[in-house]
Length: 231
Image 1 (spheres, rainbow, N blue to C red):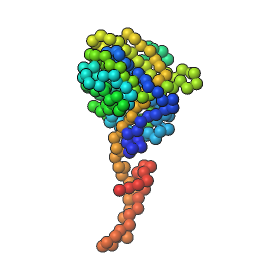
Image 2: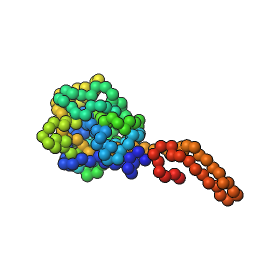
Image 3: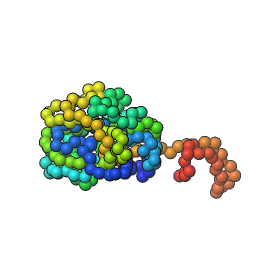
Image 4: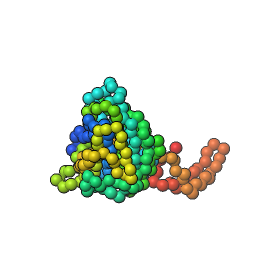
């Protein structure tokens, strides 16, 4: 498979509760988080197709009122060279592909994963950083937090998330720039689960069959890539 156990949580040190990807107590939120290729490779990730992502919700103040915890959610993802945000206006304006469109999502897990199944799988190239952008809005208010971590280990600015939020009833993202009035960057990110599709079996090369009898034969081949087991 493209990732150990197919579906692995991205974890960094200094775990804490964060307000990304969805900011608490505002009706509309747009956020982008960057997960670097080096970080992903260190945890065993390799290039492949991502079929779903998930965020672990640590707290939700209202798990019974649908109009408060259900949010219409759109997700974009991209292979990017960008690794930090330099200001609250430093939005990614190109290179993001919509992978989930205006889907009602229940953010009422309160100690469990919020799974987002992508309409279109996202292909990670294995060398670029992955940017994950989430637009979510709802009619009511609900406090919520997500399991995350802070990248500002040494006091230097490693802002790998940016977020915009506002109340109201209409929010748009045009050319990668959100319409919400409140914007800021941060050194915190939500832990995320990237779920890859199983990798197809690669064909072997130079297959030779000899010593054929009525009950046995000998087969020899070279790996098609870096595989070590065959079935």
